[in-house]
Length: 236
Image (cartoon, rainbow, N blue to C red):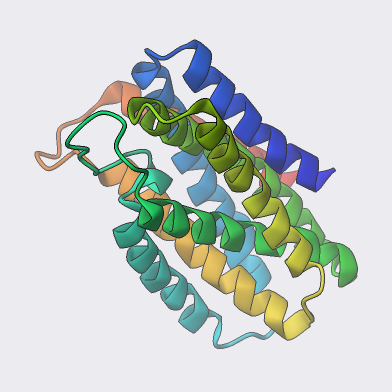
């Protein structure tokens, strides 16, 4: 079921981008909401899960996750946080393989903690991973909208576009499948790295494009709505 939810998040996101190509306002709002949700789940579920089990070095893996995401972001040009900083010089431009590689690695890593707890008999971790699944799925919809819009702008053959989206759709489920084979120690390493990735992405989304530090009430509404949902589902 987890694999299906992750896969369908990409299907929904690509469908929105394809049928509603003027989607920038909607995608920005969804992005703000998902950032608040990711941040809440990271702090309220992932961090307590990491530190409650005696993993004193959990912070190291969180920092490594932040650093890894900074590296991947340099390759993927920022699709993870809802923007693509890539300039094509002509139509029918070849798709930048580095962008896809960075994005696929990012998505693969995100999926790793989701299935692991099903095989570790840790009730709290299972609860945390269910919340990660829903937060990640909402984020992946907004991520896919940006990716699909970018692919459509390149005017690639439909076959290539569908193939790329299909590979992206299975990347997180593949990560989740691999995560199901992790032992307890490796699971917490993966959880720490993904927590760092989520922490970085949500922070970038929330604070990006606000150099003048102006109050944006609409942005605050969507971010705090996501945080509220994260708080609710983390306490259920």
